[in-house]
Every structure is written in structure tokens, then in C-alpha cells.
Length: 279
Image (tube, rainbow, N blue to C red; front, side, top):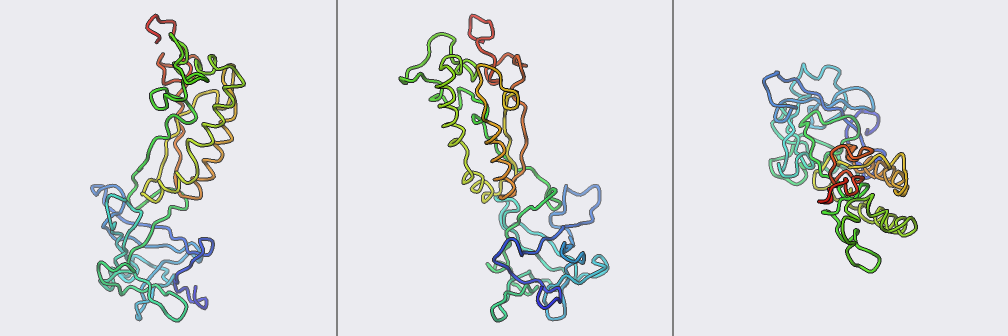
């Protein structure tokens, strides 16, 4: 806000940056979201909509955005590989793109950019809710972290001397905890939990356009029973903090029910499943 005029200027601080609600109108037959269709940008700070003025400046000053082409924009991804990580905003009223124009020490947003200019590229950060422009979940799985699966991290399933456990021992997380004993189990799991996924990983995923992570977990995360060791909840809390900072949604996957719901090792508490073939 430059002089309370509602003019949109650039900011180096996320705390003072403007936040917009993207709204669109579409027919039911259109693709999900509003990609390549007209959208309007509601400014959360004052409840008005962005519009282009006679000097090409963009300000939060429209009370009737759908009644004027000066308030309509089109979101265009710079690269489909990155989804909405980087976009350009086409101004329907001027036929040009939203761009940063330096005015003194302040970067003013104007709808005067030519196609392909770097000043026209904008990084999208989802602050709350869900994507209304291109509502796609682009996610990855954080497997082998809060619920161990041997095929993902075989080194964790070795003995203290680095040798495989014999027979049907240590086939899943429950079996590993039984084979190691409580003290060695806690030491190994704490080291694993604290290093398998860290905030830098979430930040990197976010920069690549990932907006969701799936987290497999077992019942013992909230209700630990022997031989499982507790402590995962602390790291799950950290994950929520990291994902909030980096605008990534979380899908909790109840992967391991008590007693093993599918009799397979990926439930984490199958043991040998009472089978000669080790489950």
C-alpha cells in the first residue's frame, strides 16, 4: 500500500506482503480450476479487488471486479513441470503482463510487461485453504520414516554388528524392535527420525512445486505399546511446523493398524504373521 492508495508494491518481507484470494467463474464442463480463464484477485488487506488504473498501476481498489476487464487476469504457468510454482499474470484490460516497475526505491506493480520478461514471473505461495486456480495435489510419499519398511531402508534392519538377523526376525518394525531390545531400539529410532526427513527436505520439495506430502504411520505413534518405542509424535509436530512455513499440505496415512490389517510387512506390526514363509 503506497500512501494508503491501495497501490500494490513489492516487499522483501513475507510478513508485510499482500495476500490475495483467487476467484474465478467457470462452466461445469470446463477443466477443474480456473487455469487460462479469467480470474479476479481479492486483496485480503482491504477486501477490495485488484484492478489496473489508467497509468497501468495495479491497486486494490475495485468493488465490482467482474464488471470491468481492468480487474480480470489470467494465470499462466511458466512451466507445467513446476505446476504453479512460477506463473505469469496476464492483464485482460491491457493485453500485457503484471510486472515490477521500479519507482525510486519502491517496486510498483504495473500491467505493462511484455511476454517472456523475467520481471513478469511470480512465485505462488498457498497461504490457506486450497488452490482454486489449478486444484491439483502434487505430492510425494515420506515412506520409511515414522513407520519402517524394510524394502525402503534395509540398513536399519541389521544387527548392531551390521549382520542380518536370521530366520523370520526383524522383518518389520515390530520384529526389529524385538530383536534389538528397548535401549538399542530407542537409540536407533531417534537417530533415524531426526535425520530421515528434515526441514531442508520440505523446503526443497516446495521449491520443486510439491504441495502435499503423504505420511505413513502406525497406531503406536499415538498409542505406543511394547516393543515399539515412542517419540514419533514430536517429529510429526515438527513436520506440521515445516509444512506450514513452506506451504505444503499433509496427508496422514494410517498405514499400520493394531494386529496388522492386511497381514503384510508394510503394516509394521505383522511379525512373522504365524506363517512358515515369514508372512
